[in-house]
Length: 368
Picture: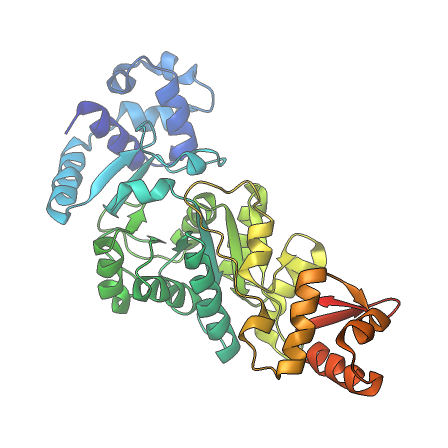
């Protein structure tokens, strides 16, 4: 292992330093190794470095711990990705406080792919589960990577659906990469890494899944993504934290609406009401908000409903005509189809109720 990497690991172990000040330090010196050769006055002259942090650097004696971490990472088959590495995900670098170091199990390259974070409650309703699976499948069909936190509930559903569909997913941990939480998802984590995805953490191996780690983890979930899909969440909790972080990071926030009688969708409805979350009824609604997406994303256009619905030959004829000619006024339809007006009105009403056609002012009809 190179000395620069040892230096970055050492910085990650210094209390009160943090990723942002560590990055400033690295940018203030000609090479990383020189940081631990600086004198107190030099350290204090660097923006953001006070007496406490300077003392932590000057008194650092944890090199044996650094070597133990490197040895542990090697035995775990984990790759270390410092922020100065050209493979470090560029989207994550954009956020206010990107992790100084990422521990990656799996494909490092997947971190640079276009991805959507799928998040939600740990105790989803039947509706929430259905929406998580449906939208995840749609996002995968569009060629997107699924990002989530490997937690119970919506996170697990998003990851598992992706693995089952042979898609790519990134799991961001709130613990060390050797301390999968929840433990029941250890096999799922292995499947993610073994099938072209990645399991990542900014915490050193051995870090327990303490509750204070998860809000920190959430900024990485949103930071890696193009946008965040809030499937189901109450008014408080980790999903709302992630949504707020996404807003601060200038990411898109998409929200699936819920029945008004469901309290589990209250957080999403608040985001919609505030104008910070965009109501989406389909994956297409999400892709329409990201029109610049081109490379690596397949915009699969679903078959029009009239082509897949079971329709009589007469109603199918109406749809074919509207498909060929566009919007038509009812008198024009009646003349071209040569049908009794009462019968035509009944057929049009049936198609409208099925969500296949729509009526606009002046009794004009076109396909949905």
